[in-house]
Length: 430
Image (cartoon, rainbow, N blue to C red):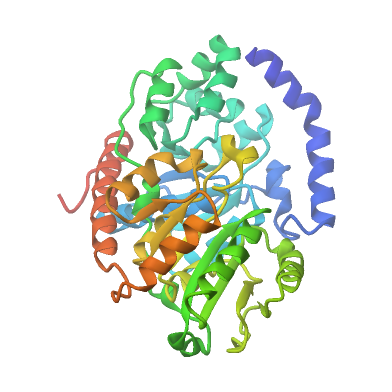
């Protein structure tokens, strides 16, 4: 099976190159760095033989954010390590430009296509001392190349869902060969731990979901320019919404409006390309709305704010008491449902979510046990709970931040200790 996979990636390599150039035309690739994905001559590796190199591969923004606290922790405890981060998406590369500019030992590159030639050239060029693939990033050519070079290999915050497990079981022998390449798997959940065991992984160490370790930075508390307008309003937020959920948010607004005339609903769609459609929905329900772009002033006479920018969730979590997290009320998406609620929870918000949160079930269970999150089923449920919370004089649950940070800190330190064992360096602070 692996021979077949290797042959297919070799045959399809010209197609990969063609697709990359098509994406470049569509502005979905970095116009200066896209060749890092397809040509070994563009790897632009850097050498520092005096420091060990840890290579993290994370597909997109969520995975990248989950490993940054880990990198900072290692940086704080050992100055003789440098880092390479690879990712796939343009958005993750843009995020990293701002997140790592204060470090002189972190480099970002785009992840090359998983062909035998590119994987071999990449690993030989960078010569990492430890490789960590994040979440569900499983690329056979790279994994076997890393194993051949006898480089320690970790699956970190590994996520093998029931759906993914069933796919791997179809090719069970191939799956066992692939996962046997990992020297250690650190799963993100009990479910993933059990599935990895059934795939034949020998060394598993479950610490908890690494996404709990993401901290709120000072810049995350930056608010809209004239945010004080919101002080006189009852504000709640529907975040990371998908199709069908904006209508529920609007109907929730109408229900709350029966109790509070000064209600403001903030809608932050998962995909901002849908902003014009959401605007038409508000018009249909005779609600005044504003599409808010970066650096726009909030219009105090509007009932609905529709956010038309990336990376601003924290700004609105910071000025909202109640947060509905989307991709949780749509039954047809139940097998891929759920968005990360941890950031909102760390801002002291009360979290509301629908019954479909498969991708983050254990996270929501943890938040529910700690009275941070509540499940709802429709706009009646949601509006009732938000009204109840508005009637509570306490503005925010300030205990959330310490609770979640302490839990995340424990996961972070245990995970760091596991990596130190494999890279054969000591924590200088121990």
